[in-house]
Length: 188
Image (cartoon, rainbow, N blue to C red; front, side):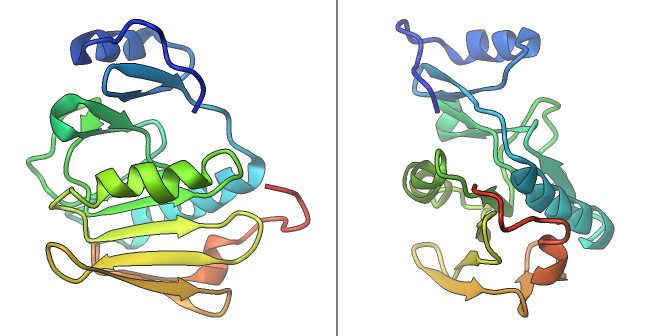
């Protein structure tokens, strides 16, 4: 994220501004942060996951890519996850979602700490969330956090020969498919 505006905004002002903005912004407690562009590897990994969810996830679920906002904490926070899966039919706001059961973030040098700390701390509070997936873009490496109960999460590390199994959406995807077309010789 980049620097925030000096004057805190209200949720309605942020949402109105996002409708007109050329650049996406995340919103955290009144601060507005411009989002940086993503690399080709980042786009391939997130696009590969999204396409697998479109084709293979339970029909009652709807996958979204990075242009759909996630509203958290009663409107005090809006993030743009790289990929999320929503299986709650009542989550029907057209410009943001509130109850994903799976969120995936593709890690980069500029976002990894935010994805691992700040966002993860907030995402864990989502009662709907069952899986949080962190995908490296410079190697075949995935961390999957799965909810065990309301306060505990288990974690698994996956490599190229493993399979990503998501209870949310009832789908299994070979890790190899998620890294199709990714050039690991390019720095993240």
